[in-house]
Image 1 (tube, rainbow, N blue to C red):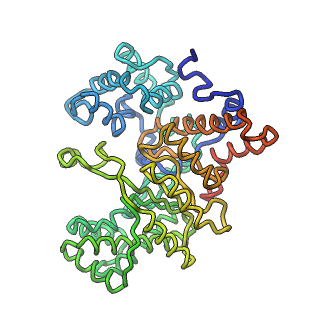
Image 2: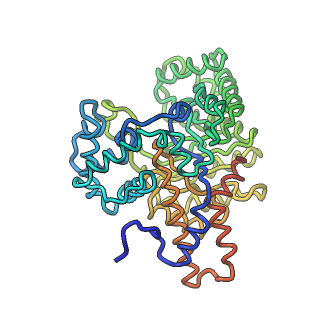
Image 3: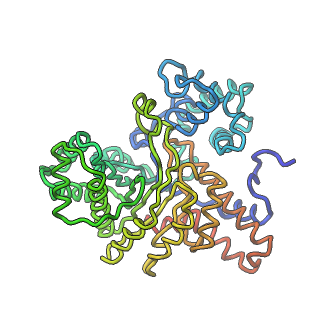
Length: 468
């Protein structure tokens, strides 16, 4: 029986082991999409306990705990201690066997704290105390955790109205790891709720210095903020959308829709879709003009539990995979931008695995020879950033595109302990390639190319693609 999580964890062949240990493992990390707190990086935050860094905002763990019968107060409550919450998580861990949380938990304990014990109710107290003792030392500050994992750059996720003060402070401090903003303008498209949209427009007006009364004013204000983000090193945008929008519209229609929602009147479904369609085009044009990469995370059905949404708000673990038919709209949007010569570098992330082949073949429609892998089929996202999801994404991209040009993995996480997800991906990648070599599906004479391919996917492709 193989030992749990030894040095060859997930690596089934000698070739896979050679590829990982001699090539993948040594590559720095470019985490080009995450939700880290820029404030914590700027202030080099010192964590109070393993509970803060592990359970403070991790809806993956909260979902598992709820499914295990743990009361909400131990997940998100304010009337329980750090130890009580950790103890409930430790009680849940043995029930997560075959869930990626089991692997992530023990990989993080091992790589961050050097702890190889299995977490369960028996070991919980000693692991809690050992982690907390280490977290109390400067070696485990936010910045030093990034250094520990050989991180070269991270791209946070930021609203256009954000001051980016912490990005600026981090850069001016001389911190050697790049922390760059990512433009996430979802709220400028959120016209379903007129009162909230009007409040957002007022905030956008304030930070941009543009008086907003018409649609053109809003676009001018957003362009000024886009320029500001670019001045602070931004190289990517990101759009969290349920589905793609590519309705036909006229400028007059969009002006009228803006006036209606800005005046506090609800829109029809058709008006909402037309407005979102117009905004995706405008944002795409901005990105193309500045050579940014646009990312689309689509397919999530969010805030399903209205009772808990009212109690806790968004991003608390009540989202699921959605079922949307988006191929036609995705094609129409990409074709519209491409026909106008304004299709930026693009990464498409689908949340429903049934769309893997749709996205992989769609990307192939708009490769134009100007940039290797200009249109990317993004890594397994959210519910799919686990071994099975990674393997399916890698295999689909291999069959229908060029895996060699893939820009690789990201954490999509709020936690400074999530960098082992890169290791998890790299081990999975090397295992698949190693198996192909040893099964005679890739010639041994091509091992130099395979080794380079591994290093490229883990690091080089992202560095060149995003112009870091």
